[in-house]
Image (cartoon, rainbow, N blue to C red; front, side):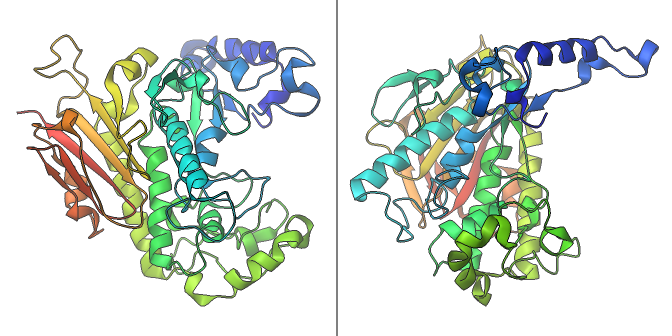
Length: 414
């Protein structure tokens, strides 16, 4: 539902009930399998329930109807679609590799990076309002008690089925274009491609429903067009021969873009920004790998809030956390937890490390020591040479992860 927030909640519930009443025998479709979701933005004349209880994000908790998660989108990318396009986020270089746009002093940007990490971790946990996290300040808070920079609660769902985690969609710039604007001008296209994959990986390995814009997997560009509904095939082209990602085909139409032409022009005309066919094919391979990993274990697709709260744990949290690194553990029944129901026949524990730093990171996590973790088989055989250098040392619980890499470690069942 486009602009679901402008539809009243009771209307959405009536639509859901009507669809769920459909049966294969009578209607040729099982209505209980139909999923409803939409844009739960709360703005304009319906904001704050001024016209009745509307279908906005906070109001839809408990309904089983999904809404797009702008919290994780903005934390990963930085800023928001209506702010300065140079604002950096967790994945685009904030604090770690500044682009020259002032977002505060070093202490400010480090704090903002840590705040974004908190928001992303709640998103990775299905954006549950009751999920408990140790924040970067050392406080223990529920998802609903952690707030965006605009003061909105980050966590607002009652079930993972109610969240659509995404970083790009048909509206606004493509993921590759966002990254190309927010990262430093002198960053290589190789590194931008790694950042693109990191963003998609965060969505693919999150609890809830991951959403990918058409072409995220092949570095799709609209040459920084932020609103391409009327831009024709020239800017909306998707090239499945993989010869080009459509970067640098001209300045996008003036109607929605002219104010930013001075920012766009030096990037679009710079040949070093444009990926080659090899970059596009490598991006596609990496995207397929991360989908294989998601579907290799039901632990990445937990269906209830109680399972997420029981099984998903974050490490590298609190005031002493290493900036730019998120460590997510997901556990299944094992000798240490015999009371836990077994969901995965192959793996008893999964650890995912997201390293957005421009350098390799090694860190000891004592809580994860003495385990039988090994790099996921998909990544062992990956065409990405860097991810294969990821290492786990059981004696100390040390994880070593290359720059701008997501590494997934699994504990196989004996």
